[in-house]
Amino acid sequence: GESVGLHLPTLSVQEGDNSIINCAYSNSASDYFIWYKQESGKGPQFIIDIRSNMDKRQGQRVTVLLNKTVKHLSLQIAATQPGDSAVYFCAENPGGSYIPTFGRGTSLIVHP
Amino acid sequence: DGGITQSPKYLFRKEGQNVTLSCEQNLNHDAMYWYRQDPGQGLRLIYYSQIVNDFQKGDIAEGYSVSREKKESFPLTVTSAQKNPTAFYLCASSGLFNEQFFGPGTRLTVL
Image 1 (cartoon, rainbow over the protein chains, first blue to last red):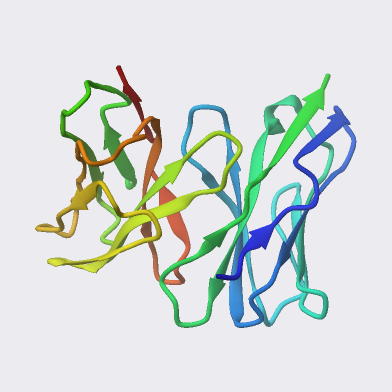
Image 2 (cartoon, rainbow over the protein chains, first blue to last red; image 1 turned 90 degrees about the horizontal axis):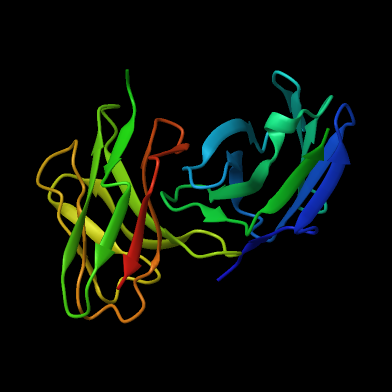
């Protein structure tokens, strides 16, 4: 089946830098996307979502960008903090389906 | 507090033994899911249920079984037919817009 993938498995940044995590999706029918944060040994936490009728959505220190033309999703974290260190993965939801597809994840490492 | 709980947090299984993982939610969600997570891999769907008394196989259902007798509960049994059950198991439920909320997970280890 179609899948969601990530360009970089590991991203290392310095505290205070901005981080960008990317995700490519392949199902053109997907109309809802979510970014999750998963700390070691814990369940994934919802960070931010975006629908296909939007290009950009902002939260607290996080921004998600959606480029439907190239089927690309990104998560931007401003002023990255050590507490942001985790695995981040995206999920896509094809319209009308209960079953999302998850990417493998990118490990974000924030150095103090 | 609304949320999803899973128990136990750690579980050990002997060869040939069936074990059951608990998942409870008080979010009033209709749909619930079980995923398996292995190191360095994405979430793989085991079973899902869209409504009480109904459930469907996911991508890796072999060796697992579920029940959905109550809206709040979706237990997963790992049977002896599952040859490589050591993994991190995640339960989730989905809300109005199909966003998934996850429990804290159960780490299962075969002795």
